[in-house]
Length: 201
Image 1 (cartoon, rainbow, N blue to C red):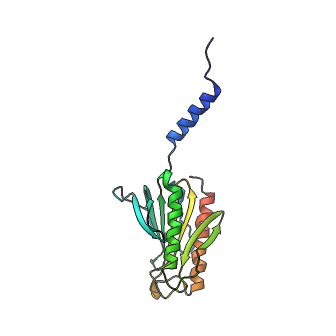
Image 2 (cartoon, rainbow, N blue to C red):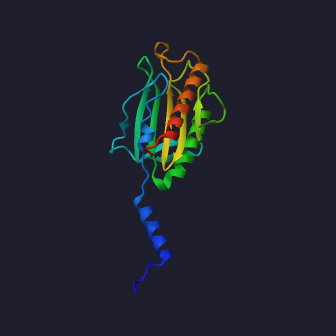
Image 3 (cartoon, rainbow, N blue to C red):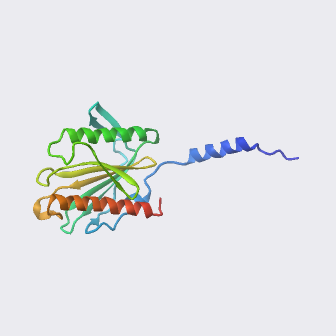
């Protein structure tokens, strides 16, 4: 009579094999959004393999590390060919993801508290299509090269960064602070809606 592999060891073996073969990665959905209103996506630039795998960011508790094993950048240009959105998607070391998230939130809080003329005293927290977004933003469009910085943690080691650029008046696609905020939120809403429906995850 043939011996059968006991059920419990078989389950353990399958679990081990799955965990051994599965790895976090930046899937195409994060870098294939092309339908932003009045913006044109440039080609995605991948982070060079020679890039540092750890970067240092300031927080109220001092300098902390954020891991980065892979990453992409995509610029979204307005109809004047000026980049309104600088989108970055980066991948953390799997074991460091939770700490990276904390460090990035603490970094945003630090930047917000040490920069004058910000929209709010605390972090801005927004939700689009089930995704939570944290950020800081200026209270005027008359100063600063970056008007807003927002981050999102969709899971699997991925962090999405939204940088909303300020520009000289002749190159802007917004006419006022409220117009900037409307377009800022519209982009994040459209991006997350695309993520939610994208099949190539």
